[in-house]
Amino acid sequence: MIRLEDGRFIPSILYYHRVAPDISPHVGVTPEMFEWQMRFLKKLEIKGVTVADGLNGADPQKTCILTFDDGYLDNFEYAAPILEDLGFRGTVFCLSACLGSLSAWSEDPLWSGIPLMDKEEIQELSDRGFEIGSHTRSHCDLGRTSREDPLRVRREIFDSRTELEDILGKPVTAFCYPYGSLSPESVEWVREAGYTSARGVRRTRIGGMYDPFMLPCRPVSGRMSPVRFSAYALGARMGL
Ligand SMILES: [Zn+2]
Image (cartoon, rainbow, N blue to C red; front, side, top):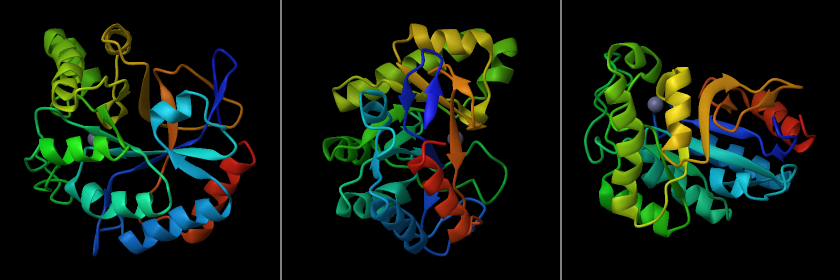
């Protein structure tokens, strides 16, 4: 569980990137591993939910928020059907100016040239009960860009919300900082733009109290052993 500054508890947040066969463990998990992890949660009677559901009254001991950064096409192809089979859902943080293109914000070959979902695919996921959140327009490093080009930072935060809402026809309320990079102004603009929460990449600390606009998470990579994942899941169950 995560304790908010106002004393409320919300479910733990797991953080994924890609889910695809034959994937490097540095960038994601295989569908087999992902399915094992989700079934393990189910066995513990923990349900995977969206950020919106997690913040709006889901029992934090019986749910876990599942988040996926960047909006990779493999989330649509592999992760979504596995989640639906178990009655789970999750939130995918998408880049409104990069829909239907290939990832191009990193020079690392492991992270570049990867297909991202297009408008129709995010619309379909949304219709199927998944939540689409904003991850800016173009994977902007908000902390660094705040100093160089604050107007761009505002656009990345405000315009990504309206662009996604135009596609989905419903409010977009969850935000996620690319690279976990932020500045005091960017956090303020995320609030001002009308989002109701934002996730970074800081890890959840036992005993920590959090601003809903700087939510922590527990990252899951392909390097994580089943034993370690079990400890994560049991921790969520026990309210850690
Ligand atoms: Zn990202």
